[in-house]
Length: 244
Ligand code: MN
Image (cartoon, rainbow, N blue to C red; front, side):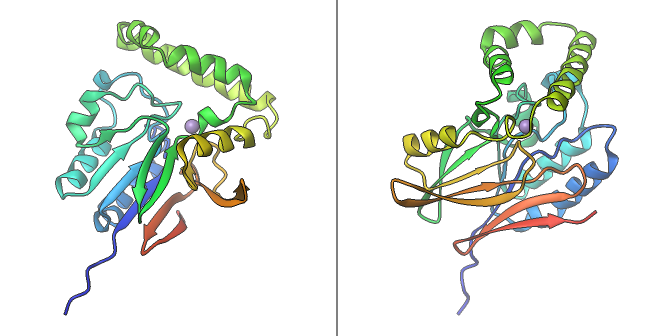
């Protein structure tokens, strides 16, 4: 008798792939060709790319090819937008076989509702960032931006990244973490008991109580210095670090 293999689901976030960061790209490509091929499903919870100025930019060919190879093998691959790559669109999906999900989204895993989100929308203490987010996530802003020539878009993206670095440097770390009430609000609204997100680059598992019921918030790590992923199999979640 053969045992049915347990479902394996992987989660990654904040890979921040960038032409200037060859090591993290190599490590992520290796992850897609090894660990990810043994999974049934891969969820990428935003900021796969350090910057994305439109599907027509023509960068990141090897990553797109590796994702296409993975989905071609039958691994379902889902993607959420991050604050860096929220302009990923349908052409990216057509080329890679990845499917875009809204943020937040509730999925069912092991008979349980699990809430997936990039995490930036939960950082409500960072008012300046939330104001910016409200503007750039409108269709009107995105249509205007995508209509600009590629060189202009790249220039603006570089300026935005410099502005973001300056903002991060002068803002207290607690302001840039998720807000507890925002977490509770979204968990209550979706009746989920578990949430998985990235964005803050603070990998951890947080336990809390909402109306006396236990909830869990799993935070994925970034790939700047090492790899980081979450594996779900056999009813258990395991956060893993991939040394470089
Ligand atoms: Mn982010």
